[in-house]
Length: 456
Image 1 (cartoon, rainbow, N blue to C red):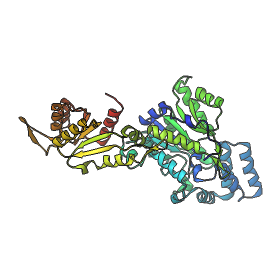
Image 2: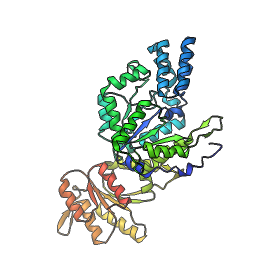
Image 3: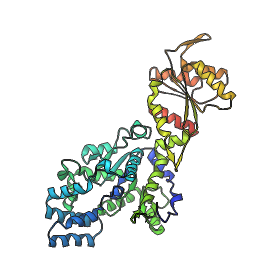
Image 4: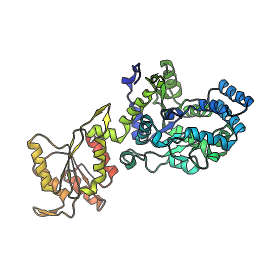
């Protein structure tokens, strides 16, 4: 914990526009070297200076001079080029691999949590210029550009965001040190960067498309790359960005004065999410403000905390004699029970399981009598559980709807079953008073969200 608490910590609330863009599947995370700092990896400039000690005196002075004259990306690319000239490509890559590839079991809890959260936020894609092994993904190629621009699964209701945590596709646009062909695909030096810019025809088109069509969240990014800065200016001109427009990007940054934040917001289209670097008890610097911002974005946009908040203390009645058919949803309900939002654990959702429409009716009557109504009723269709009701043979789900109407039992009802005769079943269910009939987990979760968000 910092000796000097950040007075801005209480204002770390994810901007609504950013959370809406993430939930809509319209946000790309752009991850820079600062993101991996929690793994105690050396900063890129620091590492270049360290490796300069392994070359001759004259070349070492040239490398340090390049870094002293230009602290931005151009200076680092030049220094790396000089290092490659002195050490050779294979030796340079091997030395970088020794310093930047860290076994997962050796990562500290802060880095593990960062990676966990990043994977659980439903970004359309994650781009990174890092070539350490923190974010395993695909290296830049025509196919991976297409996969990042047009992912098959990128909305918040996709299973890999709320159960498996596989997360969004990751594109390592400067390569990956942990791969066997790192020597060929890494962008380390000035020559590498020129090759990526001018010999990879998809690279510039890809970046232009991302920056012009998606909201970008920069994480651990320093804005020192001259080409990317020029490209952002080109996109701002293309979009005719003006003061008062929604930001085209957001960035989590440290110790940014108000005047700088206003400049970036008004003239660069970037809203800076600022935090203060404090003093760590061990004598180092405290970057916990970065993680608080990441947690705030996670809580506002990821399905796990959003549903934990929506379903906290809710009562759900589920009619289905075969609960094994719903194990994925039960797993999700169990997973969100462990969520801690703003440091507090929320009450879990309570699910009551019944097998027949009559049992469901009795449970609803009992709850009404005790003034503990159910907030939501989920039901299968139940074509194999036909029972005569009056002059009709009714399946389990439709029979429950009829019984609820007869006893004036009120609760939103969502039928979740197979796609068999979808149109006919949906018309029948809605005609009997159901809120919806759906057959996919994605649709079910959208309906649950709509119920507790008060949407029609």
